[in-house]
Length: 115
Image 1: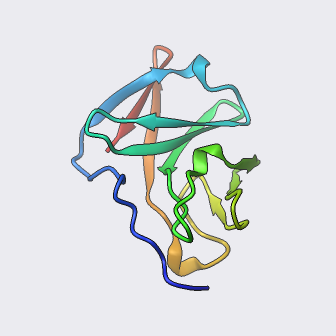
Image 2: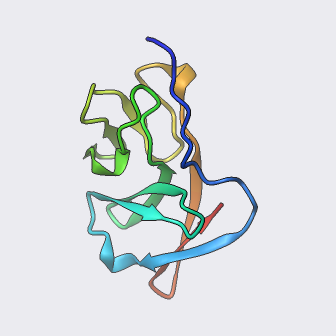
């Protein structure tokens, strides 16, 4: 499929929990870009009240996945149609180009990411 690009805005795994916003801010069936304090970012998705986070970056050409179409648990990059499972980051288009996924919890209506 081609050479994968490097995501320079991917959060480093530090084992810390970060509160990123209220759950009500991301409606079901939608995605949102979450920018962390260090300048890194993730794509956060609400699938019927279940929240999932992955790198906000398509490894094909670098398009932000939070801005792409969501089909159930699959996000399809708007630029070239690459498809990813938002629950685990698996790339259906080129399995060698899967992306990072991040654990998400909701606590008292607040979205928390484990990065």
